[in-house]
Amino acid sequence: MSSIPLVLDLKKVTIGQGGTEVFRDLDFSMADAEMCYLIGKSGSGKSTLLKTLYGALPMISGSGQIAGYDLTKIDRKSIPMMRRKIGMVFQQFHLFEKWTVEQNLDYALKAIEWKDANLRSQRVDEVLTQTGLMDKKNSPVFRLSGGEQQKVVIGRAILNKPEIIIADEPTGNLDPESSEEIMRMLYSVASENKTAILLATHDYMLIEKFPARVFECLNGGIVEK
Image (tube, rainbow, N blue to C red; front, side, top):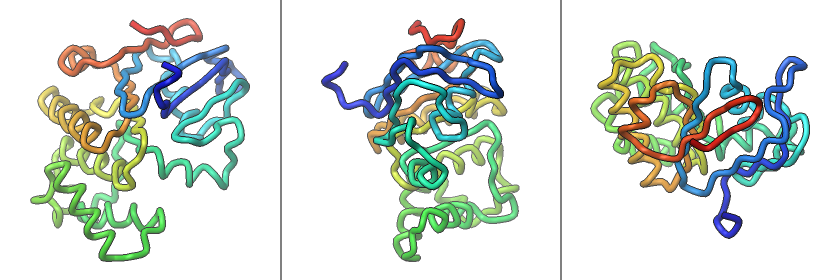
């Protein structure tokens, strides 16, 4: 796998939170445009790992890079720049519910310094087309279904064409039909944009319907299933 470009590469990494080691001597890598599932019981470390990957927790030791950023050297000033290369999707939507879909996405682009209003508008329309939300462009978020709101979140995550999407239980609050629709869309968007996806989930039905490599957090390590 060394000859394949890697969007994520961890070597002999120790990760923890609150003074407690969760992973020790962890090796884990993902190729460009690859999709992987991360499974494991509650408390097995899935969220701790994801938080470390997007800079919310520091690595304790080892070496690691994501989207070209060295996780051992990342500092507070560099984290916002790194996150422009990482799309993040969570179980909670964190949207401005009274704003329209367009306003939410435009605000996200402003936050990463897209200064040209015309370019922002063009990119928002591209993402709305990709996510099937163009007809909801001017709808306030609170009027959308849970599945539609999660589509907005995924749209927000891909605005800056990230190299990898980190998704933490993205279908956890959705019914099975909406969950499948979200997964189909993630697959499509990742394929179209050549974006890698690391998706933590408890939903084994989704894994069966949308196969990819599966890794389990187990006993302080990660094991491929």
